Length: 115
Image (spheres, rainbow, N blue to C red):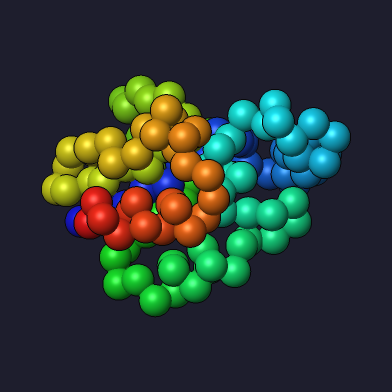
């Protein structure tokens, strides 16, 4: 089993700069709830980082452009958390689910209960 975390953001330094600007200027309209849950403006949240470190599950993290290049035949709404078992993807947390989660601790509890 592999967990895939796909952010609703594109990769690269310019996109990272645009994302930081958006988070600072108008955080309420920032389109990636997974980013908000796992990162502060400039760095990964400590509780999330600790959860990743102590967890034994294979976790992979993608920006949406990276995921679409790696898996061109898949079609999802981002952000989301997927579980891959064998060759099939299963949605663990959809965009709608992630949008309802208040903070990284709630995300960690949700993931723990689902696994």
